[in-house]
Length: 104
Image (cartoon, rainbow, N blue to C red; front, side, top):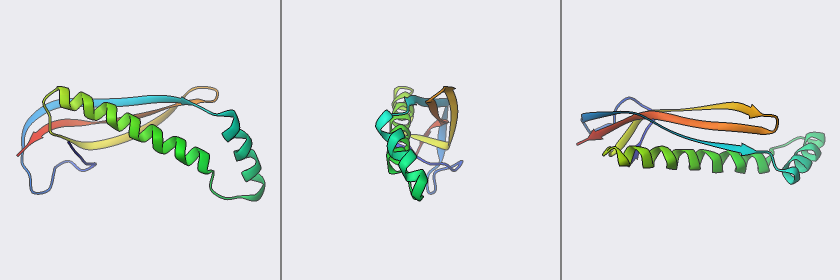
């Protein structure tokens, strides 16, 4: 599966448009990460626990989107975009969407 955030796949031609595909995941904060983040806020620096949480969330959402595209018969997803939203206090959704296509 080719995944790209541009409207085409360089060197390939879009021969079929399948439609919009999406994937999402909702994650809650982790008490241990919150504690470490509050300590890190005192001295500054990267909040590695949250960085890992976001990376895992992006990967899971992308995998779900890819599976949906594959089920539609696509071999690529173009124009991929990410969005986040707060679902509840301490929980957020990471949403990814794009256009499923078949390229040759």
